[in-house]
Image (cartoon, helix red, strand yellow):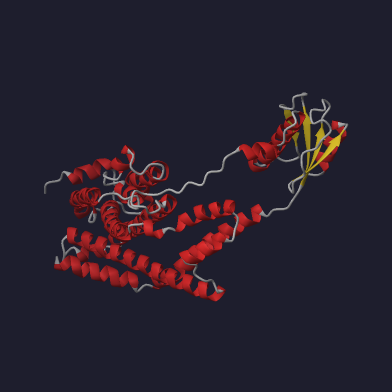
Length: 431
């Protein structure tokens, strides 16, 4: 145990004192904020895009009754009598489209352009024309779209638990998935770091000196625990720095916190219809519906459990190979369950966190770190959490024992490419 603690301390101090670690710890929140800022700007620029297209409508069947669809920013419509001349205009300008209607009913059309139209633009054009035909046929029957809309009953449903608190489903889904993605990201980042560190020490023959003083198992465990502490340190630093960054930004722009009383006062001064919409939006921010103790404890437990489990596998891979290029054939089967867990979290768990698939995947140790994290905000019982964590750490002990058998032989094996057959031999080697 003493040797493990010495190696842990050495790994932790060595990695934390590196300039790259310090720079990434300080710049990490800014880079993440910049990343999402760029995404927001790109999305906003696409939404505010004002480039218009001219649509030349050739309608020999007069299915539109000489009435053009209501003009939108994206499209300008104009009737034409000759499609041949229109094709010449289309060939000269990519912002001009030719819409040729093929029957009186108007359900068959050809859209001709110099370049392919995007799926979004094409769908928008189809909706515009479909709504135009719908409104025209309503008018023929003495009806209007506003009359039809007035018949639809708008319902504002408040989603509550038996205790009277808002369920906060959207908020719970968001927090659970963010926590799961952080676990997934850190397992990969620092698991690969362990694997490459082991391979590098093996190639430099440094490990030959180290194992003369400590057992290979102690070396492996010290590395895994040391890097786990590095990852947790960086994660906590990012949380603190992000909090400081958000606070400073909030003060800088003069934003004020709005409490529940203020929201109630504001809602009294707006129309009832809009007040219903606002209440639905405010439900997204009902943090009192969250069991923060359970979420935080669960995150720490499954963060460490998942990291220790996968890091032991990554360390075994690093000891078995001689170069980074050889790691690919072994990384894929090891990383697939973790990726599968994230996919299941996206598809099945967020849709129904208490489904059989979600429950079973939150118990299987290779997927439980990610899947259980998504389930945690949805009032999962402590008994389920304890059972999942027990299985996870028991699996870690088993895996670290098996990985240790690979590690103690592979760390001193040189000059031959590792194979699955060879690794299985190391597993069952009794010497």
